Image 1 (cartoon, rainbow, N blue to C red):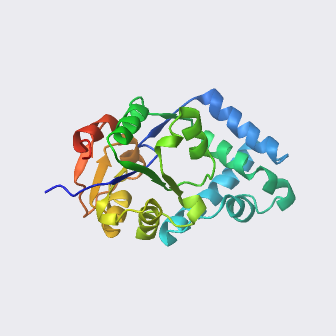
Image 2 (image 1 turned 90 degrees about the vertical axis):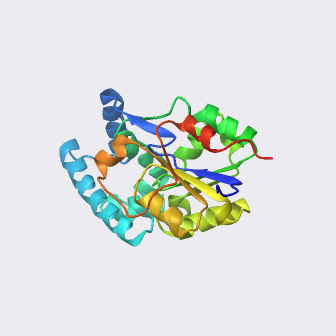
Length: 243
């Protein structure tokens, strides 16, 4: 028997949005990042150093399930050798450029229409995402015209806790005003997203089958999703209109 789902939470990276490589765009992001802090180092030396620090931060963050704020990320982890007064005014832009060095992030072609239809069908919608940026996701939502369809947006960079810690799921459910058992979650990570959703006692877990996620983090977990989908619009086959 399918649980009575009232709220649907969605992941963003590799779920609602994907990364598309664009060498010119990526190079421009790297140059802008260095310009913001007036770096005199060679690009090769600078990015080798920061990449090493980034990997160290990510490793510790994944183990502790804690996320640094943007200010902490840049002043304490990635650029501790640069003056705080130089780095701090640009932290949001630095984070954006750091992420843009991977490529352009674009929404899936069927994401918006699915969001609109789920809202029309009577579901409360929210976002739960692990991310180092505090502004990129809200900015995308505004640009794509979907802000009004989401009741809450929970970002690890803002609440300081990362998936799969069930705390981030419980916080989202509490803000939404819905019991966890009446919440569903859509994510692309076959361990982190499934494990966190199960630990939080959510009523349903839907896994988005995304090859890029598996290629980046090969993994197999003991927890199983309730559904596996390959297109966002397939959510409409799972969630009929609410009475």
